[in-house]
Length: 397
Image (cartoon, rainbow, N blue to C red; front, side, top):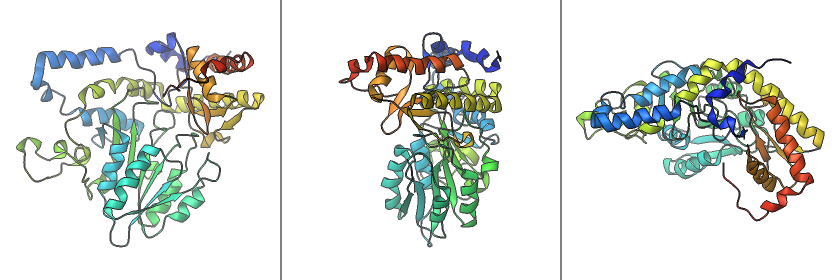
């Protein structure tokens, strides 16, 4: 029996003691130290009051960004913490001009809808047009078709690093290289890669990268991040902005004068409680090591695909390990109801229409938990337990 050194971290995540937690692609398990961090926030508010801003709170959006930076291959002072990826992408969109013959934004059919919404609504108001590249199978992205859509009219390529529905890993380095040859910039949504797939912004060649600690980084909601290549950030500034991005915010000038580096990408008053909760997970991830996490993820997702294949379940995930992120979705009969039955057994998964049951092991998952989860699906189908949930509203996870 081969020992799994990553399982030493299980005890740091309380929910693992009471559930089979297979939904880190949606919300990572909470580290045990988070309540203490939130209590620290409350104690500072209670005892320091407004003085807490000058004693650390004001700097937190960039200080916490420095905790994330090593997981991106980024440097100190280059990562800004923002409330949502949707808003971070809107900041990127608002920072560029779309005149001079460069009016095109290239996206893919399989990008996360929330990001698509803000581009669809805002781009046309800024004078841009959006070109959406379709997927041939609903699982992967044809990079040849994507590259063919990027031409001399392209101002920005805004795509996902790992597709949310299928966990397909896009060859973003190839896309970035072509986009730069065409004179375009690239904004990556890396929400489904950072924490489970190694990311190096220099090797990838992106100009902007957004993501969050909510999922694979086990940092909770409200802690998203935006990295901007310093050479690019020095030449552009977001129209969607706020007073924390001002060079002298407490001068309360009527005119904007942007701060340098990550500070220029901040907005209004930061969401301080979320930032207190955001760091414990990334610190554990860094200690565990991304190479080891990726190796285990590939092994366990391969195991899940084999379990699904043995039962004839349709798999909505890339077969090529190098093209696969951390999630395997497989469609089973009555999948929505089966997912509800699994939740009732304290086996935490989620369901997506068109993909099926999404199973997302992380570095703290045991192999036995994967076997037991698929075995539970067998029982639920055989005993028709799924029928109890036919009229239930699905749990959103």
